[in-house]
Length: 101
Image (cartoon, rainbow, N blue to C red; front, side, top):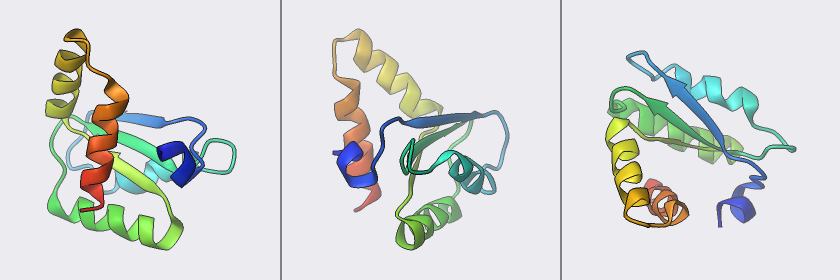
């Protein structure tokens, strides 16, 4: 689904150990392009501010680029689910679908 919708041959993941991360929504965009695609995950140590989601939607509407922001809680949940045998692609797709709600 993500590959087809955003020509994502790869998923760009950027880890940030800073707060706030609002300015870094744009920094991950430099990796996007026709060879990699237009989809990435930004993983800050803290949860994103509400303005961050506004910027995410703006970049999607203007450039068809999606950056999901997943704080530590998402990563902990994914590791727990992976240990239990869950499919992580399904978890990322759920977060992706929530982005568009």
